[in-house]
Image (tube, rainbow, N blue to C red):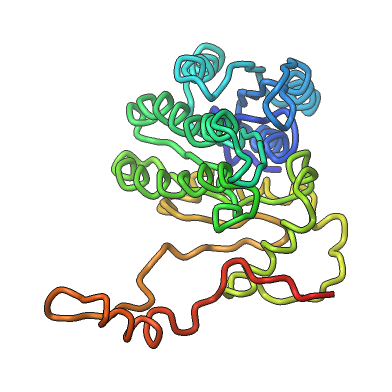
Length: 312
């Protein structure tokens, strides 16, 4: 490793396990002092334990790095401010924020409760606001910062994950909006679509995984490949870490407002939404006109985002 982040201070939420843990370790190896934030909860957000965060801190220190634990929740604004305060009190500042923290409450929309909806948005999307809002004043004051928000390809549409998809795609809009606001202060903000074999992915049914693959291939977002299983190393959550950490370095200056896929061995840049078809008229439309024109214009060649399974 090198010292790309020497004298920098980083906060990583949800850093006790999975992808967050790998990012925290890699940041420390590059010289950053790291606040390892994790409540130690189960995948659905229940229960709490200090152990995951403390174990990662011990790993970092055993490798000669500098780290401290934080057990505050990102889902509450005041609690999130304590995470930032931990960085300030222990290391004198904050230069990097990574927000992988998240929970799952998967349910079909006709079965989902209000509490299941609220809980997921509270951690992912509200958590992003809470952390960014509390950290940004410090970054503006020093005219420097790097923020990486963890979105998900599930935001493109994932059956049984309406709450999760809404939170994650909301994070993309949040990223693009604040990147414009913060770039004048030399603060780069990006979203990533990570991937890997973690506790969270282990709870996702294979049918949902297959559906996502079909959706990606249908819209040309993924190259069709051999259906054989990739090697175990491909699903290693550590594959995300160097790509995420790059976005946290000075070398990423000018890279902002982007959505970047970090899963597996690829590094992918996603295009922002843009108009692909439109129809025009000098005046107001009638339903009869739309009946005639839409099937041969906007609706022609539309790709079904939820293709019907081929009978076996």
